[in-house]
Each structure stands twice: as structure tokens, then as C-alpha cells.
Length: 380
Image (cartoon, rainbow, N blue to C red; front, side):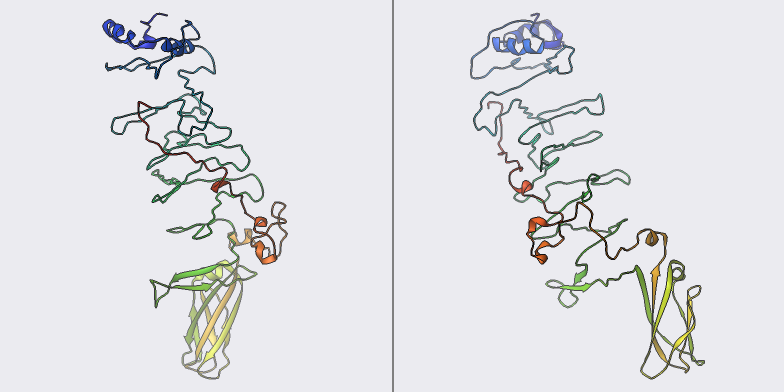
């Protein structure tokens, strides 16, 4: 083997090459032979450690290249053969002592499926990261997780101790999404599934927009209690209806002619049909009626006497394009994937496992990675 080959040694001066040869051992020959497709047949070294290249004190990088034309060629392959329990053993370990340096750096810039760092496991976890930020990635897809194992998880983030967030998603792009989720396979697939047995399954700090149907078996309005905002909640139930209706209400007092014109937003009459009126006199007996129906945001009440206070209410069924497209189906059959499952199975003497979105314990037990954190050093 030509030890002056620049593919192995970089472009150092000739004197540096002689110094570096002093560190090459029979074990180095074994690794280099594998990388260069068996150019030599050295003996295997037996020692506490085998140091590849020794100490590189020049400014150039220590480079190992595999020039074999093969789709499975590897520049470096690291392997440990111990088969016992070894949570912290590593086929390849990278250590960086510099500020903001990287222990392992991977770059792959050819092809849409190229991966700077790729990890795979048939039984455990492909990639595990520890630190203030466990895993960070840059690229068309910064981090990609894939699992084809039953009850497996593509990406799992675990927060323990004082850490708050298992997964943090941030977008600094114009009109970008901090988190984008899609699930389009199966009738009960969910882009986001969240659960909590003690707190909130979801908490949104800011406006929330929903373009499709929104359903809840127990819709509430909840605010801090005005009399004791630090310790109590004030809750109100949401009024339900078989129709998509809107309600306007108010009070009006008739003039000297016994009439009063009431104004409402003109858009109400434009986006609602089948307008219904309710009138109630206050403080005295009277027989108010609608003298003129709603037109251009105005309707007329006639109570037959001046100074009559009338409480009024208008109810209209929405007729805007969105309401016409999203009609309320009061009684409907469950889809195939929903049949035999319940939103609240215990109300019907069914086990919790029959819940519509019930999942197994994979995220909390069998499939959750348990890798012990360890501070590694170059001597390990």
C-alpha cells in the first residue's frame, strides 16, 4: 500500500507524512484495507486501543476515502461485537472539544432522499439525542422520522425533569407553520392526536381557526371568575341547535306614534334566511307586533302606544356559502372505522379500550426508548 497516497493522508508536506507513518499499526492496515477494497492483507492488532492516524497537528483534515464504485460503499464502518447489555456502547463516536463544535457532522447534497445522518433500528430507536435540544437538523426536511413497525412512532420527543417540551416546533419563515401534520389514510385518521389524563390535551394561546366541522360532547365557555379570578372559573354552556342559526336581540322604546325602527347589521339579512321575530313588552301591558319586516338592516315595531319598552329577538338560519356546504346532519351513521367505538365508552358500560381514538400504551412503555445519558470521553 502506498502510504503517500493523498486520499489517505491529505496534502501534507513529505516530512509530515513520515511522522504520521509512525502511528500506523497493523490494525490501521485492516481498516484501510476494508476502505480500499482489500489492497493489502495485514494482521489484526490486539491492544487496549487502536489510534488511527495518531495526532494530526497540521491544519489539513485526516481523510479516509473509499473509491470503490458501489451503491453500498462506506468511507468508515465502526462496529462493536460485544453482545451483552451495553446501552452506551457505540460503533462510531464523535467528540468535539471546541465551542459550538459538532461531535458528528454529516453532509449529503445529492438526491432528494439523501440524508446527512441516517439511523436505523429494527427493534429500538433509529436516532437518539440528548441535550437542551435533543435533535436538530437542517435541510429540505430538517428532521425526518420513519417507522413501519406496528404501534411504532416516526418521531418521539420525551421531556423529563424540569424540561417542558417533548417536541418544539418553530418557524421563522414568512407565513410558515411551526408544525405541519397530515394524516390521509383511514376514516378515523387524525393529523394531530393529543391526550392527557391530568391536564389539557391541547392548549392554544392565541386565535384558532377551523375550516371544517368542529364537534364536542361538552362545549363550554370558560373564563376567570369575576369575583375570585385567582381561584375560580366561571363557565357557561354553549347553546345547541339542529340548525345553523344566529341570534340578535335588544330593547327599544316606541315613539309618539307608538312605533320604533330598529337597526341591525345589514349583513344579517343578506346571509340569513327564514328570519323569526320575538317581541315582549316590559313594564306594562301592550300588544307589539312587527309592522315592517327586516329590510336593508332595519325593521319596525308597532306597540300601539307611545313610550312602550319592547324587548326584541331575531333568529335567522345561516345561508352563506360555507353554511350551505357544511349542512348539519342531525342523525347520521358512523363510518366503518368508527363503528363499535365510542366517544365516551364508559357511559354505555363499555371498556375504555373501545374509545374512538384510544391508543395503546406504546408511548409510555414498550416502544419508549430508555437510553442512559452518559458523558463520553476520548479515552472510552
